[in-house]
Image (tube, rainbow, N blue to C red; front, side):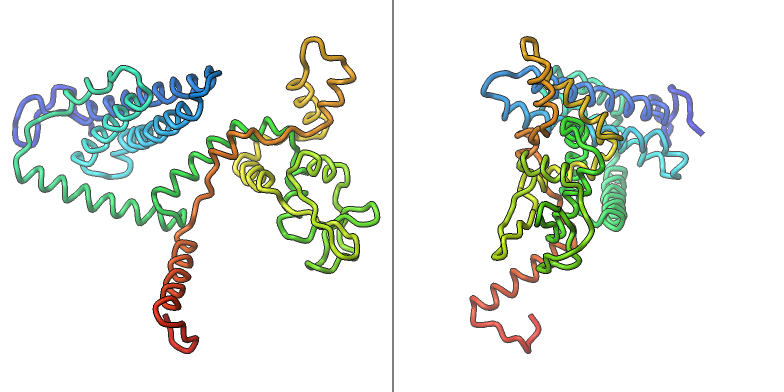
Length: 337
């Protein structure tokens, strides 16, 4: 059970921080970290000068630390449910405070989170420090192993995936798409989408440009006009439609945030209309602009980074090893690398 604020430590020393203190400090640290990240994001939104790239770097750094502070805050609140020891709870609070300080430092705001450290301090014995450090390393290794098993990614790539989801919430609604637009891009992703004789179809297999399921011609034309699709002309005049670099990123973001898609074409059109409506522009010009799909925001192309799974890293390492073997004396196919 959680003790009162004025608790006594395991060695009988008065003033030992109690579980309720740790939880309160962790929760407050998370709040300060999130506020710092929000301030950094607002600075990007307000920026109209040439330092936007620098402000975006600051925003990413603050957001990463805010996510970490929130994670430790959640763990601290669930410490009894999860059955962790009190010294682990203390470490949660300490890590939350550290992350909040880093978030505030990255965002360039006052380091108010530093004051929370005083509520967690108590002189530790050498044995306590060694025990806590050993427990910290064990727990971090166990937690990392669990997260890798669930996600198939290491820590850096999990953070990259988290940032991508954050970006998707911003950029996907701006596309003005429905799920139908995503299906067209998914068809192009297979390498079997083609345009022939005025019809768009999904071929049964690549290279056989006859028959196959029909795909929306209107959506395909709109996506190609907005440069989400690129056309590759075949020898018989067939146009094979493939994803452009912008189309690939937009598709990944749409998969990460399907809630940002509109339920109907009408709803998507009205959202685009609201975005392009400007004072002084005629109604007909606004309608024409709303019928066109906007390109993906250029900042999304800079910010999105595809996460790499552990399996992909192993495959890449294997290829690199084989390449090195060839360079150092020739690769023999009958000998395992």
